[in-house]
Image (cartoon, rainbow over all chains, first blue to last red; front, top):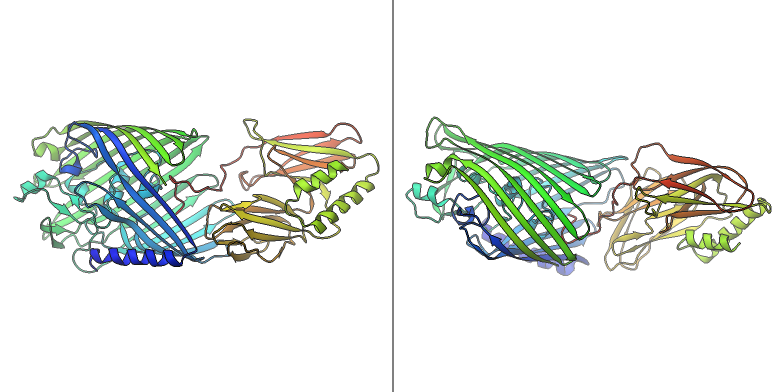
Length: 409
Length: 228
């Protein structure tokens, strides 16, 4: 099914269900910010800079907007969709997620549900706001920046919950399609930290230097949510434990089962490869008094086989720890993280690596329920062989300051 | 006696007039049996900062013997069960009322007796008889952030109000064991109890408990934390 066909279908579905539904919820946000950007050209503009904004300019930017809608069609059936609007060259309107959930009531400790549609794999423990935003910081962690950019499961997810006397367990298993390019950005660009989430319909920009190296003319864009090669299903499984209070621990495994030798023509360039991407992800969250602690770690591989029996395999890993202080209208948050990639190869052109650390400090003030003001400083210290290959400094320190006004509905 | 009536009104939100009257009569009879020398007890619950804790249940080790079962009402307003905690006694019934403009799907999987009702706006469930002692957690299958607790007590039990206090009046002089419970206490831990002597006459005996509670499980929907 062509991606373009999804739009009218989902729009019609949401409209039709909303009309019949007795229960519906709408939320939205719109965001404007003043940004003091670091020197390096951002990845969003084809550079190797690690922050969303670059070019050593201080100016106002439209941060984005999103609309969240949910309709309870029947007591067992829920339809949900999120659409975002972004300026820039990625596509203006796109569907972040859209699904229907069937969850019959259960009068036993076990309860099952089935979701079908376009889903975020349950990686993030940060992003539970409208438009997949984070209430803690403006910029998501490196792990969840990547999750927002390249991970989406178009398929179904079965969830089984056990509600115990003391704690609850949650098991999820999903079969999905259309996530074969996942891993591309980690291999060709490396990690980044920002809040630019891809929707279905978004196009991601490849690094201009990489495009030029292929004797093509930048900018080049690719669709992160498509199938490549023979028909197949990807899968993920996740287990979560929820203790009394706000403590939870999750572990998941993702595998898109893409054929690393498969490729397909794409609008931006010659051939787009399928990246066989697998990872383990673990996360935990707890509260100690007024402090919320969130930690996540992710470790995986992505592989392509552009020439028969010649594999390019990138090992990627990242971890972060976030502490948020819940002080009523004021909510300071601090996050530290580490990230790295490694692509070993006897071919010097293929061998790459990067590593880096980042610190994010944010002060959120919410004087009204519909208004949030945020000041955020993000400092990323990274070293990348890829940048050196193109004559840029291998090590760079990007510092980005943002003053943000967000209206919430 | 005015104190007794006030107490009954305050602790039996939603009771019908007949049941209210029967309970007053019951307490009057019980009070008369205690002869003229009746004492009273106030149980206070506070958190570690000294703030009063509401919706805690204080139980004294004296069997409650009603003359007739009561019907209790649990409302649903703004996607919240009201009250959060309701004390009932074996043989009593509970009716769930939907005062919201959206549907609710009230249910429990408690081993004490499972039930489920889909309630349209303005609709009430049929009475549910509660015959077995224990705590029944009630939820909404549509709105996971909604939760309430029915405490089915065989002994005298009262719920703390906003000032963190539960009152027992017309107590016969003697030695009492008071047990406290709150839905946000860590589950699976030993019961919290204390002994107190209630004198025949004089000032109200007070007993204070400092409780460490977990966060409120009722996640009120916020624009920054969507509950999906």
